[in-house]
Image 1 (tube, rainbow, N blue to C red):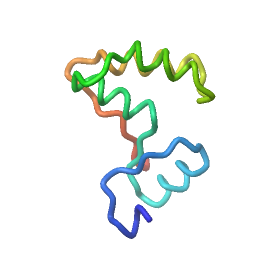
Image 2: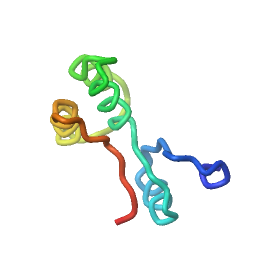
Image 3: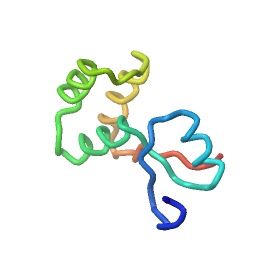
Image 4: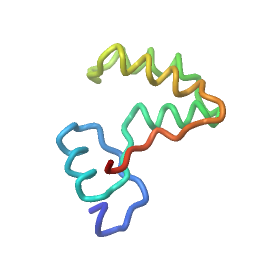
Length: 85
């Protein structure tokens, strides 16, 4: 669907799905990417959002949570997006 719509960005957290999307030349981000970008834009407090996310059944390593905190604090902001390398 993202290809049909010529989407500029695909939101996906599934690892295999993300690999397929990247292999097809799509630009992707995930839940952490959306939260980081919202924090960089001053829309949310990243610490609060990540704490609430940890209280759900969302699965991610502690390292990913730390990386999201680091990225949210970068100046100038760096958009958390991936493309085929």
